[in-house]
Structure formats: structure tokens, C-alpha cells
Image (cartoon, rainbow, N blue to C red; front, side):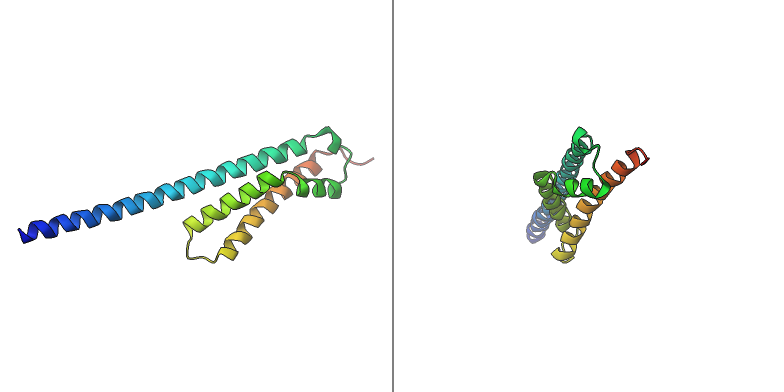
Length: 125
């Protein structure tokens, strides 16, 4: 009888641990999905900015400033979702490092759009 009770307790502890791991996996998957969605939303917004007719005559610096100010809601949503994902994946790393990584991802997206804009522009005469 005592072995049966020990076995039952072991089963209950194991299933509790498994459900905690599964919940953690679900949280990580959910955070990853939100980060990817945030990235896609931000990129789509930047692509709309890239293709505006009013940007055709802008210099690289003017377009860069325009992109830096564009899509504030999408940019912030992406930053927050990425920060949440990084915190979920790497909880032992300082949150300041995660914030720096999220900010670099935003800056990289902006830089990529500006680079594409510059490459698309016809050469100066």
C-alpha cells in the first residue's frame, strides 16, 4: 500500500512538472509567434513608406529621417513583442541586454529599408 501511495505521488509530481514544461513551451511559442507577427507588421509598414510617391525626390538623409519617424505603433509593438520573446527564451540574461537587442532589430529594419531606397534611386546626373 505504501508503494502505491509513493507511486501515485510520483505520478502526480511528474505530470505537474510536465504540464509546467508544456505551459512554458506554449508561452515560448506564443511569444515567438507574436514577435514574428510584430516584425512582419513593422516591415509591411516600412514597405508602404518605401513605396510612397512623395519619397521619390528625397535624399538618403531625408528618407532616413522619414523612416525613423514612420510606423510608431508597429515599431513599438515589434519592440515589445521581441523583448517579451527574448525574456521568455533567455530569462537569465539581463533585461537591458534584451532591450538593446530589440532596439538593434528595429534599427536594422530601418537601415535595410534605407539601403533598398538608395539602391533603387536613379544615379544623380
